[in-house]
Image (tube, rainbow, N blue to C red; front, side, top):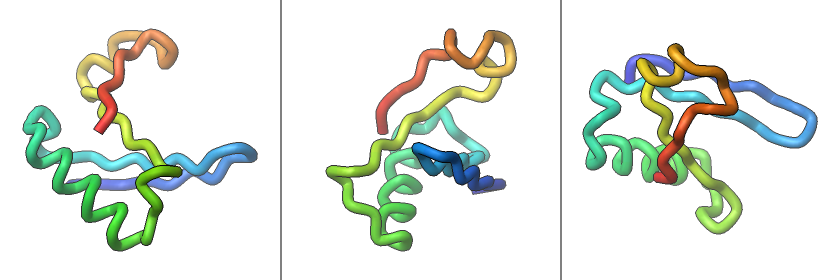
Length: 69
């Protein structure tokens, strides 16, 4: 993990995490599991999505394809 930010919004909390190798599915899964564990998040109430950085900066927010982790 190389960076993180937290945005508290009216209807949601948005935690963004930057990974050195975000294309590695094993790394993404491991990081999401550790975040759930350390923050005591209920997996049935919290969904994590992966968004590739290079693709996200080329298109608008609503056009970005995300992968559920």
